[in-house]
Length: 392
Image 1 (cartoon, helix red, strand yellow):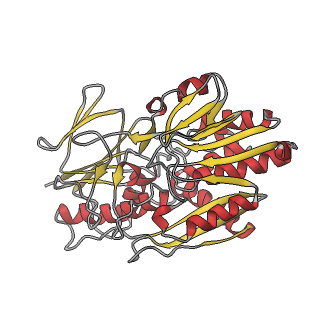
Image 2 (tube, rainbow, N blue to C red):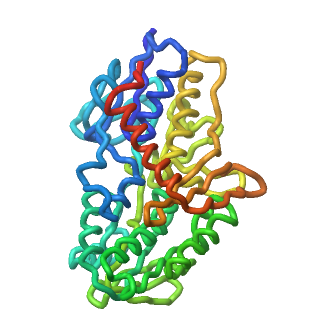
Image 3 (cartoon, rainbow, N blue to C red):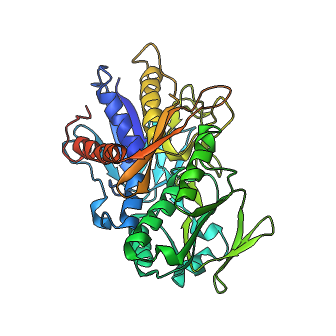
């Protein structure tokens, strides 16, 4: 009897599930696969700071899978409205219902700017920008190019957020751009975040090492500052600890929320041994999933863990559907590149599941690591835009 597998989301997580299934050596002849996505276009998150820096234009970062790369897969373009675990159906905004035997939720996170009072007003008056979408990153580039000096603040508005190094990478690349513009010496750059130190999921070493990289570039770091509200008219940030700071230009990481929830608000909890939710046969991966590591740290919302989650989910979907004898747990092996400016990148790499805590360090910035990061995008595009890895 043919089984129905539905994958919600055709970004890094959802596409990686397809790739893992195709490479599993398991016959998929009796498995119908449906992928649902709003527009079948996505981007690699680390390309957005490149747009802000001016290395890329916003039109160049979209990745659209080719027809050949998705051969044998039913494509449904639409917005998911709800999931009914009891009836095993997904309902779309246009009224379509899609039945499933197994379901993988890979719908990611979305920006929720209005969750912080005053933030939208600061954006509207042109004193606040972010780089968490391609069009926003292009606007951030324009604002930085026009900036002639003053106080530049990089603000993490809330946790969790996509890409744990992004605000620090953003500060370093902003400094790099202002240096090229001749405005760096006239600009004071500071980073404020609710985190005690950057990259807390990586353990006690990488965060202080990243702060040291910031300070080498005369960028100040202020941890444990959770924002309460933005006063757009006065260009002030008010924090929950009673402190406040002013800005001439605010570059912020937007509040995040799951693009789709399962049975209530908030991120979808999963068992890292299977990536399964509390409902049998329903799995969640990538940014929408909440995973706690063995050392009681939230796993970063990063592309590598969307891919790791896809590896686990694909294996456990096949096991759940009775096609294999065993599944596979989520791997804690991860890495993240950090662009540091001047064509160099650093990297944090290691096992995020190590006990008593991860012991990840940052490697020194190098041009070689920056080229590796560029190669990662090229390799992803080769698979999905040119169809070099069949999905069936």
